[in-house]
Image 1 (cartoon, rainbow, N blue to C red):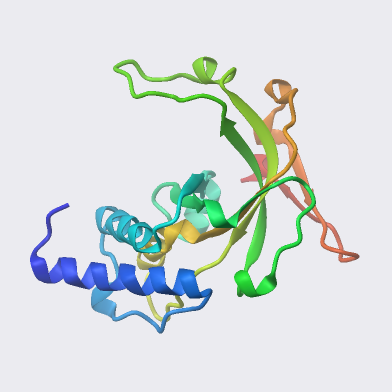
Image 2 (spheres, rainbow, N blue to C red; image 1 turned 90 degrees about the vertical axis):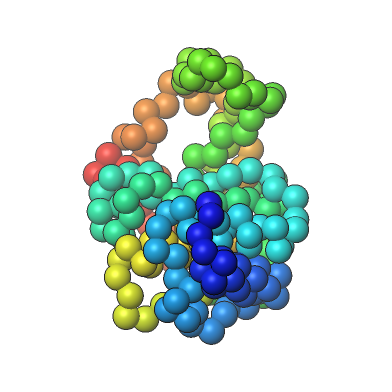
Length: 208
């Protein structure tokens, strides 16, 4: 990416604000409109700069908005990627997390795949068949939230700010590996989430 120097300063300013908010578990003031990314390229640039400012190891990547229906509803033109930082990565089905570390957080149930060996770049594309014996599948919970708030913006601008803000990812909990996952029909697999004694929440990707 090679925008003009003034534009770079605007995007770098936003990245620093988001990075500081991530480290302080806080929210930034509403960003200047001039700082809001206007393309995916700019949004990815901000996320990369934010990650450099945070300067923490990365344990993996999250991919949000994987269903066409959700992208349509939320105004995304493609999936929403983000980093999973090591300090907020938790492994095991029973965890006690501080709510102060995740202000205004929400949770989503996920199918998470862990690479068990390096997957090098190669000339020929990797296929699902190539990879299925190189990964393990874990039921997981993603902790999502934003370090920013926006008012009176378009769906597209909101989507690009979500990408810039690490794809909305602020934490991740990996459950115990499920070994017989190759026979699961992920698209038509019902998911149930319950918090304490509250009513169960269900989701069915086949409807999305």
